[in-house]
Amino acid sequence: MFGMAKEKATITVDRAKLSEARALLGVSSASAAIDVALSELVRHYRVLHDIEAYTRTPPTDGERALSHTLPDWNDLADDTDWDAEWPEDN
Image (cartoon, rainbow, N blue to C red; front, side, top):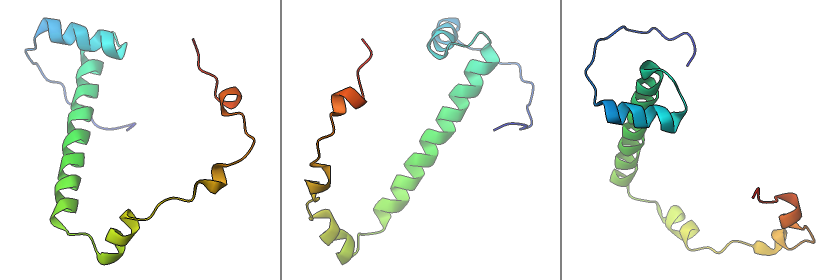
């Protein structure tokens, strides 16, 4: 998010991990790498908490029935050349 307040911190990190993270992310600063790492950590745990919340609520009969229905693939039966539409970059 733009405009979020930043806090200056002095930290000790493993140089090899930081170097690898910076290379993977394509960033030059330790701050940028750590900012991305913290964002991903927060996102990961929010997803885990969401999953835990959903698993505590059993599915309804309607949701169970929906999970057993088969899709109607007929809408995809057309003459579109998908390989031409989405060529792979080699």
